[in-house]
Image (cartoon, rainbow over all chains, first blue to last red):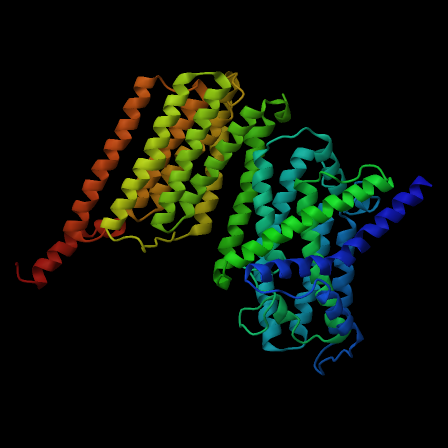
Length: 318
Length: 234
């Protein structure tokens, strides 16, 4: 009985994240609008957009290969699978035994490869440009992300995200310099990976500077809906990853209705705070030139590396 | 002994020391002079905070005094003088990007590893909880030296020099709970006098050869000769 309960919870967690992802995006847009003295769209707008796109006919370019049709499903499925490795509400996660943090990064990498291939596939200049830029960003972002995971793994002695969160929960409150650096690095990498300002602008199709939108330019209908939804899920995934690794307080360690409800409330609060933080940073920062992005991500890499050093020098030799 | 078993004050000291290390990297990579001066001021503030916290942990009043001296000198007075100098030399908008940023940062990372390796035997003899800060402060000293090596702008080199002094102070505070107050006062005034001298010196250089770019200073002799050849003496 207990086993069945755990399995259901594990299956429901990524679906919950999937359902909540558009809401997080809407919340960020709303806060941004308020900061710019606009009223902003209702919180349900992203859901309506998805429904509208799902109902429309998907137009595929004559030059496109079958890969172009498969890509949205692969991207969506890989992102959803990656979300299944995350403890969203409870640390009891059978899926985490199969997929740890490194597998999560690998799944995101698979999604990205399909996305860039699809961007190249139709043969339009914008798609190719977006794809090459995405690869530029990835080359710098992925090593930094891995270093963040390694830094935390050295403290928690596991790469399993659920056990990481559980061990942070079980420990006393500690000021760890390595965690501080890793958090800063993860925030920078998250901004770059999710294509937010200052690396990419998610709300424009007009500029020659677009990265993610450039790759999606040829998509329409249900394909576009899946791609958009996957991007929203990825943002939510990174937000939950940050929350899980650095502030897991409130996560349920036992499966009772009360603890789950508490975990849900804590999660909503933390994600709302993180989203508001992102909205503020997007309001005060301007998008940077593409050629400054490697510098931005080199800083993230340096921070992650310093986290590693701080662990070795300051924390482990005691 | 586990890190989480340390008292919270010692943990805070370690966190601040790690942040000071990061500021040394920021000083290395920051190409704008004014921002670099701000980074230097932050580093001074962090080092002063380490001194104050160590004082609070050990109950040593001398450390409060040296923290206060550091704060006044490194956070307020020297950055203010540097600011004034930058304004008088009209260098506010001057950017001095590194020639090989990635390589420089990698060298910085290698320096941290090296410092840890060098400091490991030293740290074994110490019994203070903050002994590992020795490695960090050695890294800050070496990073300051690296800043002086890779920077072309004379003022940025001065910042590297001052950062080295910050690293030494950090090492003294963390390993032996500060130097004797007399020594500390001497060092503080040394740094201040050095700053004043640097200021006068830079104004003179700027007056006579119109640049503070170190690369051009080596061409001094040849360019003067050329000037003599092409222009009639005034």
